[in-house]
Length: 128
Image 1 (spheres, rainbow, N blue to C red):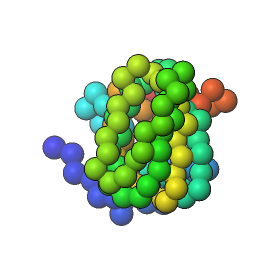
Image 2 (cartoon, rainbow, N blue to C red; image 1 turned 30 degrees about the vertical axis):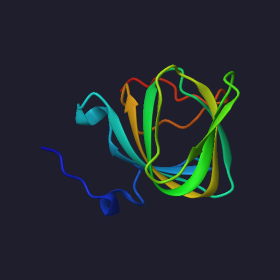
Image 3 (tube, rainbow, N blue to C red; image 1 turned 90 degrees about the vertical axis):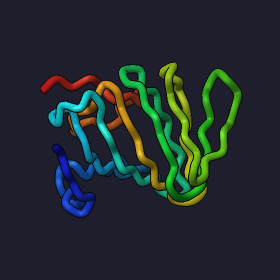
Image 4 (cartoon, helix red, strand yellow; image 1 turned 180 degrees about the horizontal axis):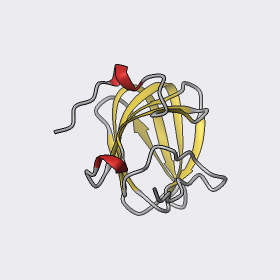
């Protein structure tokens, strides 16, 4: 059984500041669950280009307000508490925070904890 507390992750290497966001990584590849779990803050007033070409991601908003714009679709979806979206097709997108958002994110394959977005907006696959 794995038990972790957010307060034990804050300020450690698993508390990753990506500029527009802060990802507190609760479960990682090393935990052996087959997915990773993140408590992520999207900073107010930011816009982040993201393309998870190597990962599938599901996101659940627990606080704040923003939107996701899916490129190539021409659609913008509002995000508020209770909204879930899943990037099941490796969609390129912009994530915008009107008010600071707190998101619960799940990645498959799991991340190692060292990932930040590269110039393509992608998390690379990192082998341990």
